[in-house]
Length: 493
Image (tube, rainbow, N blue to C red):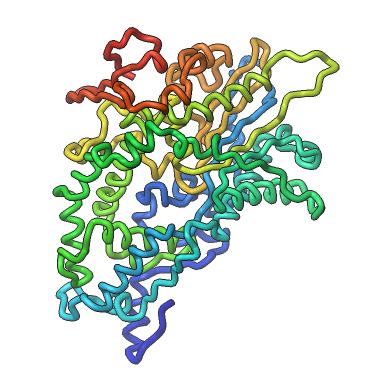
C-alpha cells in the first residue's frame, strides 16, 4: 500500500510514527490505535475482549453463575450473534473514494500541519476498496465466528458437544445477507474444528429466515415512521452540525489541508472508518488513525450512538417492538427446552444459534430493557453522557453475541443472560445472575402475552413512538399496555 520514494530515509523515519502490525502472532500483543475502542458498530470484538488478542481461544468458565448453593446443569443455550468483521458497504466505499479524490486534487501542499507521513498519505495511499466488496465477510470475520464457536464449545461442552454437532441436533438460523450466511457457516466450521469433525460430508446445516432475523424490514411502522422519516433522527442531524462535531471537522480539515466546506461530516466519518476498517480487516494501525485523538474519537462515537439510539433502540418505541417476532421465538424455544418430559421422550434441543446484524440485536436488547440510561442522549448533552451505558462499541461490535443459558436446577429451571461472553443481569433481577425461569417469564408477561408484530407494525397512529420527557434527573417514556400493562400513565422504564 505504501512505497519508499526518493526520500527513502526520511520516509523510513516517518514510518516510526506509524506503528503497524499485520497479523501479529498471538505470542505478542499487537499495536492497536488508541482510538480503537470508539468505532461504534465497526469495532472489533477484541476491543471488548482484549484478552483475545493474545489467545483467541481463551475462556473464562466462571462467567457461568448458577446459584452456588444449588446444584445446576446447563441444558440449553440460545445464542443471537452478529456477523463477523466485514468489508465496507458501497455507501462507505464511495465516501472513501471521494475523500481520496479530495486529497489528490484539493489538499493544500503548504498546509502548516503537513508532515512527512501526511504527505505519504496524500501522495501514495490508494483506496483499495472496490464496490463488489459491499459488506461481505472478510477472512478476519470468518475467524471471529470460528473462534467464538470454539470458545462457546469450551464453555458449554455438554450442549455444543461433538455428538450434538455430528448428529445435527443444533439448530442454526441466519439472515439471507451474504455476510450472515458466511458467518453461520464459519461458526459451524469452528465447532467441527473444535471436535475434530473433518468429514467433508458433514456440510452445513442452517435455514435462512429474514422474517426472524431481518424483522425491521417488514415492520411498516418502523420503516415509514423511523427509517424513512427524517424527523425521527433530528437529534442526530443536530449533533452532526453542532459545536463538537464542527470542532473535529476544523481540526481534520487543517491536518489534511482541505477547505472546511469540502470536508463534510460524512467524509470526516469516512476518514475515521478507514482507520477502523484497516484494523478490523488487515489488523494494521493505519496512518489514517493518526488524524484523530481520543477526544475526536469520543465525539464521533457519540454521533454513532445517537444514530443507533434514535434509529434502532430506545429512542422510538416501535424500534424495540419491531423485534417482537425474535423475542417470541427465543422464549418459545426456551419454553420448549424447559418443559417436563417423559422418560421415553427425546431430550430438549441443546442449542439454537441465530445469526443476524447489529440491527437485529439492538432492538431486541432494547425490548428486554437493557442499557437504558436515566438521561436519554441528545444533541445538546454530549458532555454529560461520558458515563452512559449505551455504547454501541461495547454492546454490538463485530461478532457480538447475546446468550440465554437455561439451567436444570433443584428449584426448577433458571436462566442466565450473557452479552459478549460476559454476565448481564435482567433489569428486574439486579442481584441474581440466574433467576428462576418462571420469574423471568413473569417479568416479561405483558410482552409474552402481547407484543403482536402485525398490530404494532401495521399503523403509524400515536402513540406508536416514544413520547420523551426530559429532566436533569430522568427521562420518561409513554408506557404502552403492550410493554408494561399500565393504564397509559407516564412511568420510568
